[in-house]
Length: 247
Image (cartoon, rainbow, N blue to C red; front, side, top):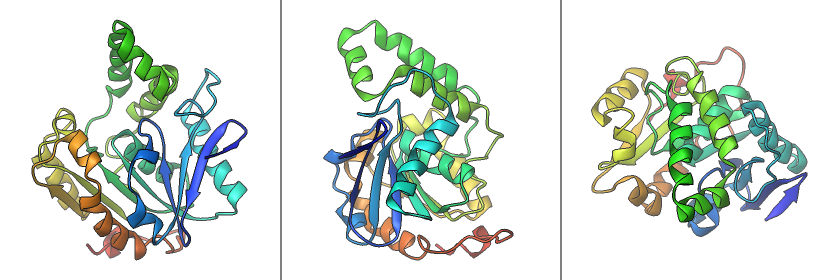
């Protein structure tokens, strides 16, 4: 791990860049070798998350700016994004904010769901965690609760479907038994939404939300192949990538 003005990051592999946000997942315990064998994988924890500094005041522009400050430091101009659950939301949110993003791979989150209540959900989770010292300690070790609330408040304020209606290639995947995803949108409806948008996705049998995170190896090879056709594709104003986004 390295540090830049309170932003912790790491880099492994060579090739086109794939950014993996670190919000509530410690990727150092995950095997991302399928990605690092083909790409330069840059993991970035924006301030407020993981081991990065916790200034106490946050907004989405700051989170995006922290990621791209590291990329500027590394001389990376364009990049694809990869993430799971909250980190997958950040992967898509980076694309919404930055023309530098070439493609997005998001697992374990229904990007077409009604997300208007996500800020309130985050505050309720934090309030509940405060009642359990062990759980609260785990929360504080993962992120500043105020950072998580700011993150989800931003997501809640987005227009419906904004995180799925990107003008960059997007691929989703989730476990068949993911109750967390289903609490936001039925998997059947998510599939219909993605089919209507022409967005490729994969449903992995027999895995719940945490199980899919632990078995990323089941999807990483396919994601790597998908990204390999898109990570270096330059983006030009007016291009409609989705219509050219073959599965």
